[in-house]
Image 1 (cartoon, rainbow, N blue to C red):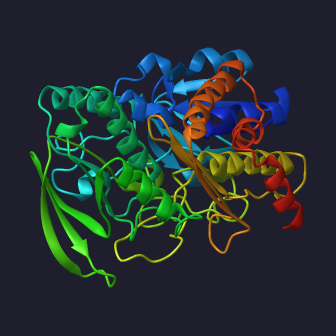
Image 2: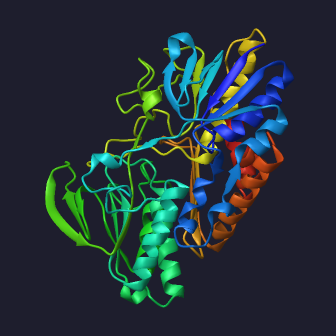
Length: 430
């Protein structure tokens, strides 16, 4: 009997526990470890930040659902990983040994990289967690009482740009419904070399389409920018040329700001010798396994993936839900292969798929593979994306409540996008 520990119950880890249980049966022990008792559906945080959702709409009690399916659950932060002893040290003093460890922690949010940045002691808001989105909603109420300039965007080193575009669109739509948009100038500030780069070198006509969406909403933008400092009500940004040199500095006044931070590895993971890159993100081979520790696998945002291309201001490559699901499935297959006397052979597809809601419409893209040149580079927009994002939330939470081990994106999201046949054709032809 083997003991498989899954560390982190987010978009990858919670479904991974179901998939692992279905693949391994009752013969092996599975433990899910998470810092808190509740799962949070992060893709809905932009809606929470403007009051379109409440916490109870997008969170689930993890223990209730996993323990009835024979999965042990521990709600404790991990203080240390002794990889050479296959042991986790938890914050309450408990120790958990494992035969296999699957790391799906998500990132540490790097607010400390910029003076005055972030929601804890800084002057910008975040939508990276439910708690941050609730705090952003409180700040948004103050904006409604005292309308003024807004700055939204993504700082240098960011790899997840979609939520910034989403929030800009959602905020615009909510303000327009309240008849306040004319009193709130919005500036979109991004480290991308151009609008629609998305950390992917662009996907299809993402540049033209996203510029059009910003222009239609009267949202000004600044690209190739880095944030140097944030003071109360003022953001200091540097605009860079194509060589990365500063060509102009700006002071942007704001009454409200939401800026995406760059990501690091969580402390306990980053501290493991030889496991991570300098940012604390886990290095893996083509089978999602650590080259340094053969019994450690990893999937999700905590993974080390090199940038798609070099940009004047540093940007990273995103890890979308479809990609994370693919990584998790590969890990489950590879651990099962080892436990049954085989060798790992399953690889994640690492295709990038994203649904971005803009309040009443939205944009969707599919990049297969993530790094160009691609077999598929598909970018579309329309009201159907708004409804698809709502369906995404509904079906994913239903999957978790039902304990389904069925791959979500294969059955629902690709079907909603109408690209199942296209995907199958591409994969058949390589």
